[in-house]
Image 1: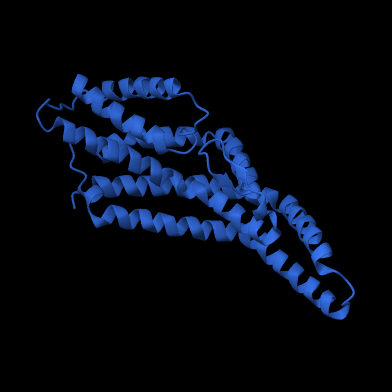
Image 2: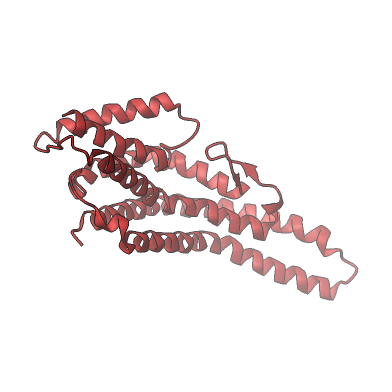
Length: 253
């Protein structure tokens, strides 16, 4: 029972290290360890028919479980980064790219609009109980990828190919989210350019930037219901990508 519990604990702790929301720096490390231990104990009790012998290959199995947990958490959270990428596209067109914020969750610079949309998505994430969806996913991962399984796809090109497809899907989602605002701001640039040609005395650099900021905020205000509805689809896509990746890891080939 103890070797099985340790393997389950390693996979869960690795998952919480890379999974969205659960991996935030603001969450105390003791809480993460305690949550992993409690959840690992529950999962271990439900896996009473599994037996893992304590042999010399046990350290290699521990490393395999750590890689599985990290990769599943990364696959689950990869599409979530589309929000910040979309915010980067919007800020680059708006002019907010010169004033980035330091995200306390990962310690890197993030765009202002991307951070706003990301915080809004996290609020909707808990309101829609999407965190339960990820907990169910990591629980059923032990059925898709048993602890005694080899997970050969993790060490082959199949796993990397699946992650790259999720990476491309992330940029496609970010482009779809940013397209309404970026396209509208492009029309604003065209209008300002026409005005600059017809009225040369007008300083377009003084008028253009405030106009683009006002237009972007107005469009963002009217597009907010669409973004909120888009978040639910994003959660479904993330869960689907997580499930497909686990099925790939559990495949014999």
